[in-house]
Image 1 (cartoon, rainbow, N blue to C red):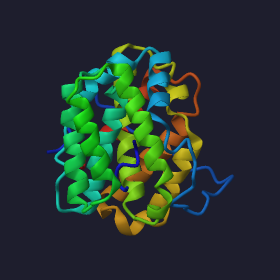
Image 2 (cartoon, rainbow, N blue to C red; image 1 turned 30 degrees about the horizontal axis):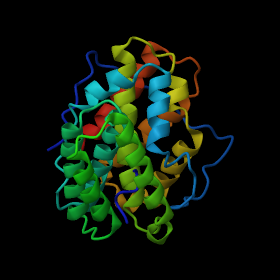
Image 3 (cartoon, rainbow, N blue to C red; image 1 turned 180 degrees about the vertical axis):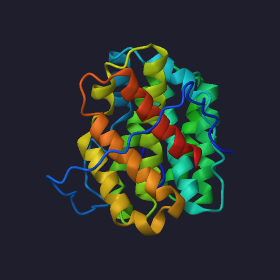
Length: 266
């Protein structure tokens, strides 16, 4: 589902207490790998059912879905990087909420995703599949059927992905999806007052390496200049903080505010 790009600003609840974000210095023990726009890494683009299972296992799925209901971006904008990031953020919210949210609400989100794809001049598989998904959701399917449909969509798009791997907006869309999903998970964990599962849910080293390498290379020319420094710091904080097991309340608050700040720039 993260691959839909190819084939009004988010209504996010502000953090209740301001957190002073730490400045974390990168380790010099190893260098980031050269950026590979198409790493063929299944961890980078997980199946929707795996996302749902992880949230359900840690008892945070319902809380995350409640916060996802507040997320709504204007995706049909003329600046392609912003359109891609917002469309990705809508996809991230959809992945978090899909198993527990009513079909009509999911359809509204898919319509925003479709509008974002249209603004990016995607006339291929993405628009075709979102149209099919909207027809499917109009039949008010059971949550289990929605999960199956999303997995099938993900598998089909994954098979057709490699030919589009050089599109410079792919990492931007993926970043929007991951950051929005991570923010919703952080909000959900705070809502249930349990930062413990944070490590299991957030710690994906290959994902962090992918985005950090992108920002340090291709992203220098793609990402708006005002976002580069805070994005680099947020990615570094995520890489360092999410190594902790278990994470603390303070760690969770730091992760949430950093993501809140970045997504607020969209």
